Image 1 (cartoon, helix red, strand yellow):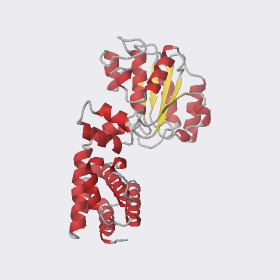
Image 2: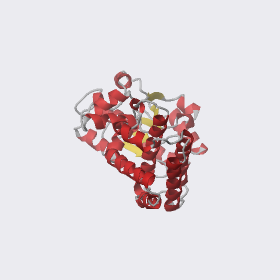
Image 3: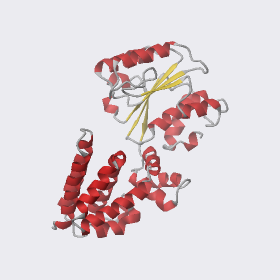
Image 4: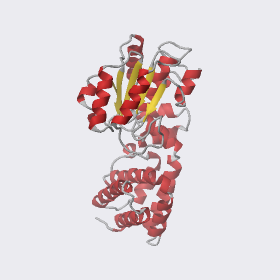
Length: 336
């Protein structure tokens, strides 16, 4: 998969490839944007470009290094995530420690085994405690000539200004919805591609994730559940139990519910379906929320956001979903 197939703005691709060709990228690169903007894909594309055996200043996606990098198995490209590392995959935690940085520095000292550079992909680079961030800064201030550090983040403000100043910055803005839809049409039908592109807010990595998670089928199932809750009070606890049982998909399902409620609010305000997250179900959503008060829809959206937050606190999902479904039921029954 060469650069022209990487899901990001053409200007971003051109600037990165030009920087690599002219040797301007340097040893430290900060790749940032909203969650799902494609930071990981761009970082791996950079690593593949430096290691591809078939193309210069591009990558083929098919040679041995390209394939191994895509599978995270190439000896000279190492990926680090908070709370986990290559020497101790069972390590627990949500942030980088000084220990992580020391281990990374030890790996960086050794020369590459197969290529010119040893490349480090640092996922969620903002998730470092103060000591770890200062240790990372020291590594970036005096990098070994055979190392490249690719810092990946969704929260660029969480990166120390002194670290940001030492990095080549690559910002990944959302794609235009139509442009993303065209890209997605290579793998799914046009109407589905448009809906996924809208639901993803123009974020290509998120769009691919929604496709993998069968977003459209699950969205339709949730619409059916909401219709039951609207028509039958007895369905409130039944649908709450159904949601809670699908615990591994609960966060994704709540995100889908939030999009449906947001579309309902747009419908209540007489907004055109071209602005809906789910334009292919616009008429169904209008009927679902017909007569619902805007204040109740806003309250329902806030309750969903609260539920998403509560999931991180190990709250009983059954009780959480029961309360949410009761709120949704009230949004249907309390008018004006």
